[in-house]
Length: 330
Ligand SMILES: [Zn+2]
Image (cartoon, rainbow, N blue to C red; front, top):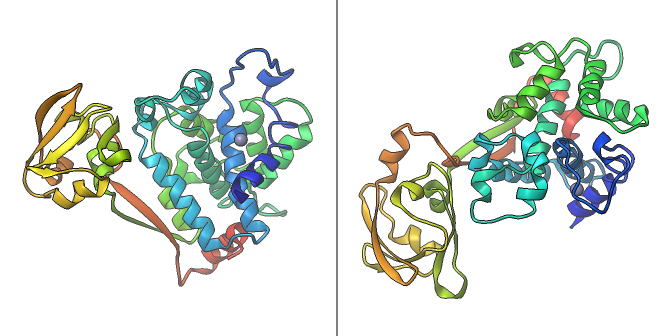
């Protein structure tokens, strides 16, 4: 709840005062389209937890735990391979606010992924030379945008980034200007360089196998004692097995399934199993393939088969320690 209050409070600045040109003036009588919700909602989402940290309502450990949750949410969304946050923003009225069983495949959240774009920009800026004043950061960019005192568009964000760090993005990004970097992260679908950026900020990234349902690429619900498929992820094992949304999972190798946990209980890593399901009152037997072999077959990955955890790294060199201290006060 604190996060929500912090989020909505920050909107007083970001959206009410700073707003996209498309929202000026805002016409409340119809749907308003903008490609910039990754900034207005995403960056607000980045700052909501940042403010809880800065006001000491949460500590750095809690902060990076919240961050790992956001990262895992995005990694579990196959739609990120098809949709950029700019597209997701533009389609908010037709997709994000009208979710169905295909939403995870068909879009990506401009809140969560937008906040990670904010994080990546902030950490990249913090790698840039200080040039006589304070270390560049996203705070400085927000301040520059604020000082424009007018509705903004993407070019304004690129200019504010350039003014904050005139030398351009760090060399490892492979691009020369912040505008190009925005193009890649905001309008592209490549994975964000989260692991390396967090590493350079003294945060350790640990990956481990995701829960079984995520590795299968399926979202399940088990209300009322029956286990039902809510969504099937694109390019997943569940998809190639032939599962569809609203199928009821009845039994695995003859063992009754009623709760999500039952699936892991009867699941076998190293052999194919028969899966009895009920679809539109008809019983069907599907074959669940060996998961391990599937992971190596190299087909395009929809959801990530891994979840990550973040920890504060120890024994940092002086530069990394200072960078983390400026970012996390820890
Ligand atoms: Zn919001």
